[in-house]
Image (cartoon, rainbow, N blue to C red):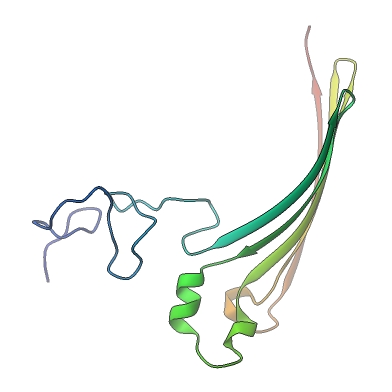
Length: 139
């Protein structure tokens, strides 16, 4: 086994601009740090947002779908029914921000359903999040 540096590159190996894993060839810095969003490596997310911004504030609705850890899923799952076990999370989010004098009043509601948690068929979870904010602007 070749000795490795702290970030997992064999000593004496040619230095490149970016670290490349022998299987996953993108998404790492030269020090082995993962690049990308907080949803994790090998994951993907698609969002569609509609928002209205006016003098009174802002209101919006977002549809979102997140699929987690595709690299692991494709490496470990096989068979025709395996794709039914992909860990995916569609979500619906709504938010509003109102300006009332020196006050900014906000609220948000998010509803998400995680399908097949840990790739277990029908191991589904629902998450509901409610947020309320009030902010005073000093003049």
